[in-house]
Length: 55
Image (tube, rainbow, N blue to C red; front, side, top):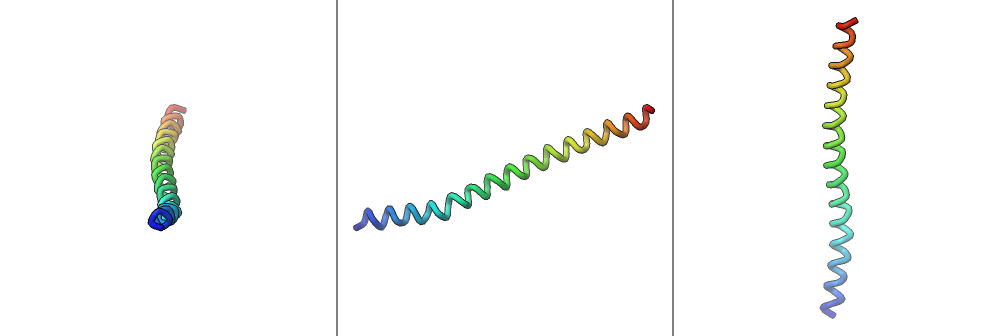
């Protein structure tokens, strides 16, 4: 009987824990991606400004 309760708690905990870990990973990925995107945008703008000044 104790094993059944233990297995039930493990399954129920996994149902809560896995989506939370997934959301955390997704949030971290988005944050890293946005930092790279902003750095790329700054680089593109600086190149565009340099090209405008050169012409």
